[in-house]
Image (cartoon, rainbow, N blue to C red; front, side, top):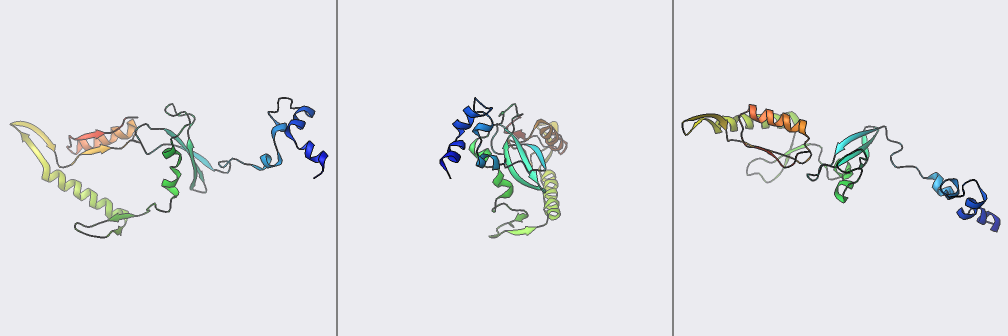
Length: 188
């Protein structure tokens, strides 16, 4: 590279000799800068989500390409976080793409020492059977001569990422089942 070519490639020279005297446009760009593309530019769609970690409920933009999550960033439209994420939220891409993520139901039998894979239908049937049995076993018609019609056989504790609509549906479901111990750690 000659001295003239080197000087002409210098941003300050381009700034004063070109049409960008403030150095905020073409003068500040190098050949390397021109080749850089945003890591989300190839995404097919952006899905709005909420960070799954704590009770704050920061908004996330989930970038999807060919049906797979490729990037997760803070949602600038979120009134909660205004586009910012903590280190844990910034690393939440690993929840969907990490090698340690399980994509199947694992079950350990009572007194068992190992896990076995179950299909989702079997696992859902097991959960439904256990809810029905716990409701039946823990059902109370009366308490201290008062009609209560409730079960203390199970309870619900919601997670940090549930929104008001999800909490409403969970509350309706568990109330209809007769549960009275229904709580949520966060309300977003």
